[in-house]
Every structure is written in structure tokens, then in C-alpha cells.
Amino acid sequence: MILLTLLLFVVLSLHATEPPVRPMREVAIILTKEGYYPKSVSVFEGEKLKFYLTSTVEEPGCLMVESHKVFMAANKGKVTEAEATFENPGEFALYCPSSKNNGKVVVLKKAVPKREVASDKNQDPLLWVPKEY
Image (cartoon, rainbow, N blue to C red; front, side, top):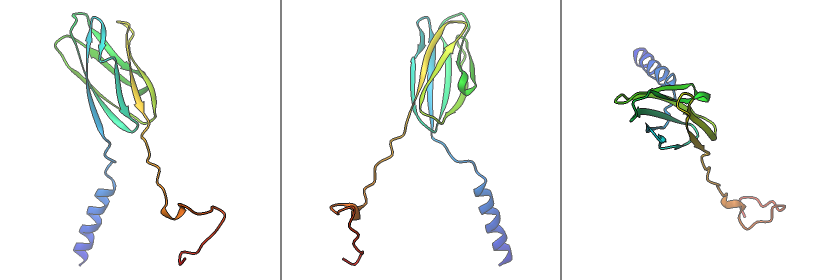
């Protein structure tokens, strides 16, 4: 009995210390002569975004999301990776100061469905009626 209790405690304590699992979205961005493709990426608040970056031009470039500490090199024929979690809704700039390319990450607010309470329908808000009626 003591061994079972100890085992249960260990399993529960290990489970309690696991970090929360966040949804992850992956996006591949290509640096071309015209700029980033795609120029805009959309995610929902709280999602983790994994970037894959490559280039089609000979000159080295980059991709930065300064507000989320993402700094990536873009070289032809190579793929670089980075991750960032976007907690708050809004627009965040993607850019490269050396090549003057820009784009954006659009973080959308999650819609919370409005929940109606059945007991509130068709009643005068100033009239209190006990549950039995």
C-alpha cells in the first residue's frame, strides 16, 4: 500500500511539473528578389510559431521579429529555423535591416463563444423566482 501511494505521488508530481502544451503552427518563408514570400503570416494568440527560412538570391539576408527575439540568417540553399510564442493580439513586424525587406505576423484574438444561461431566457431581470417554480 505504501509503495502504491509513493508511486502515485511520483507520477502525479511528474505530471504536474510538465509545461503546458501550446498549439504550434509552422510557416516556411522564402526570401526572394521581391521580398519575403509570404509577406504576412497569421496565428491565434497563445500559439507557438515555428519559422523555416531560406533564400533564392545569392546575397545573404535575414529575418527578424525583434519583439520576440527571433533573428535568422537567410542563405541560398540553406534552411534556418526559429520559434516564438505570440501571447498578445496585434501585428508584429518581420524585417531585415540589411536587405530592406519587410512583412508582418498578424496575431488574432481567439473568439470566446457567448454562453447563454437557460434560466435567464424570457424572465424579467428584476423578478426572482425560486427553482421549484
